[in-house]
Length: 186
View 1 (cartoon, helix red, strand yellow):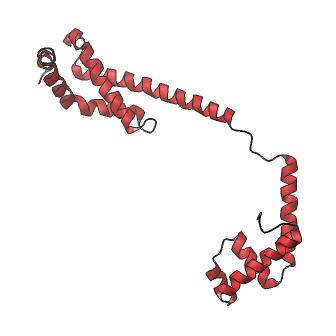
View 2: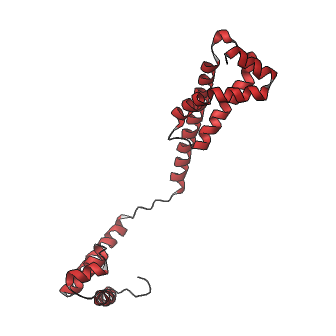
View 3: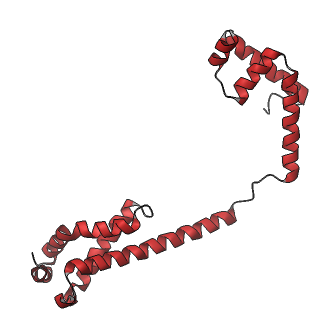
């Protein structure tokens, strides 16, 4: 269908004309819109932008002048402009939201005093772990620092898994008592 016939159909039978317009040019419009908005907007936003492109064209079809360009070129221009506007709006909103999020979030970085206290606690803990017996020290380090499974530790140390768990539990209780912790908080 040529442009003149499609415009005539849009004027005489808007519903059929609109269906024919979208059938003929939906690939073009979606391609233009998706090319500008992919990775920035959701699929629903892309579809809305494409639908708005067809709506804008339909509303302007009464003043369509074939001498100034084809339906194809006009739809591509409308799609590109709509997509660019939506892109700008989305980026602007995200930037604004990011700025507001930064204002709302309290500074969670530890202070120098907190960092020094944490470092001292770690030093004391490592010192107490080092004071454990060889087997208990290895179990604690493998289990809590390397996140190694009980079964793996048992194989490596040639022990039963239940024995590894029991020794780990007793070693943790010993560490808590030496470091002044209680079993309810840790």
